[in-house]
Image (cartoon, rainbow, N blue to C red; front, side):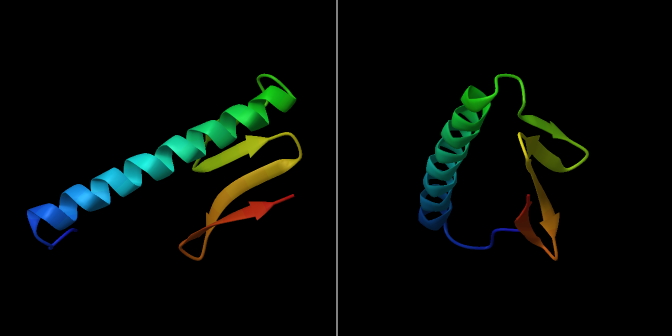
Amino acid sequence: MFTGNPDDLRRKEREAAAIGEQIAELLNRLDAITPGSVRAHNGRITGLALVIRPIGGRWSLET
């Protein structure tokens, strides 16, 4: 839960949105390699020869 001031919250929201845009672009690039291969399900993101999932509180790549 965020406990900072409103200015900090807005800064963090902008930062989160920018990171989200980068993630979306990377997922689009992965999908372009093999269209339709990128899926999100059961708390994982899968694609051609990869699985991204949370391990120990951090997102990790399995190949």
